[in-house]
Amino acid sequence: MAVSRKILSKKDQAGFDTMQTRDALKKLRTSSEEEQASLLAKSLGLPYLDLNIYPLGIETLNTVKEEYARKGHFVVIGRAGKNIRIAITDPRKEETRTAMKELEQKDGYTIQQYLVSRTGLERGLEKYRLFNLGESLEDMKVSLSGEDLEQFEEEIKELVELQKRISELPTTEVLNVIIAGAVKMEASDVHLEPEKESVRIRYRLDGVLQNISVIPYNVYPYVLSRVKMLAELKLNIRDKSQDGRFEIKLSDPNTEIDVRVSVLPGNFGENIVMRLLNQNMAGIELEELGLRGRAFDQLIGQLKKPNGMILNTGPTGSGKTTT
Image (tube, helix red, strand yellow):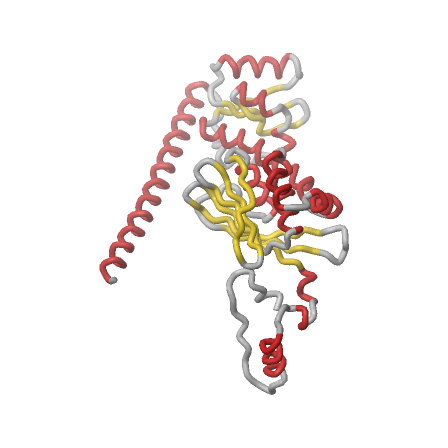
C-alpha cells in the first residue's frame, strides 16, 4: 500500500510539474509575441497596444460586424463619433488596407491605428462570441420560465418523445427541452457527459441514473456556455471544477426550482451536473414522505422523546433534503 501511495504521489507531482511547465511556456510565448509586435510597431511608426489586457466594450466592438473584422484582421477598440481607434496586426496586409480604405471613404471614419500581436487580436475577436452570449442570456432566462417551459412539458408526454425531440432540436432549444424534460419527469439531477463522438444525457430518477438521449458533440460547446452563463461561472476556465446556481420560475408564482450546477473537467471535455430542487417540496406533510408501517411508527416514537438524535442518511436522490 505504501508503494502505491508513493507512486501515486509521484504521478500527481509529475502532472503538477507538467502543468506548471505548460503555463511557463505559454507565458514565454505570449511575452515573446508581444515583444515582436512592439518592435514591429516601432519600425512602422505606430503605437503598440497589448490587447490581452485592454478592456473592450460591446458597443465599440459592434461598430463593424464580426465577419468584416475577421476578414480585415482588425477590431475596433475605441470610438468617439466618427473617430475610431483600430487594433491591427500588420497595416501592410492587403485585406487590412482594403478594410481601412472602405471605413474611411465609404463610412466616413477617421482612423487611428494601433499595432497588436496576433494572439491579442484573436482575443479581441473572441469578445464578439462572448458578448453575443451575454446578449442572448436574457432570452434564455425567459425561455426557461413560465409558460414556455410548461409548453415543453405538455409536448413531452413520454420518454421516447423526449429522446426524439432532443435529437431534432435546433441548438438554441436543446437546454430548454433537457431541463423541461427533467422537470416533467421529476428528476433530481441532470448529467451531461461528453464522450468521444457525442454527449450523453442522463436523468437521476428515484435515485438511479437513467440514459435519456445523446446530442452531437459540436452542439455541446453552446450548451456548456449557456449553462455557465446562467450559473455565473467563468467561461474561460476549463481545467478546474466550478459550482454555481440559477433559478427557474414557472408561471405559478409559488412554484420555483433551484438549479445547483457543477462543471467538472473530464477526458472528453467538461461534464455538467445540474441538481433540480423544487422549493415547494419543502412544505409537504410528514405522512407524505413515503415512510410506511413500522418505519413510520418508529420515527414518530423517536420524535416524541425529549432528547436524542435522528440520522438522515441515504444515496443521492433518496430524499434526504426533502425529509
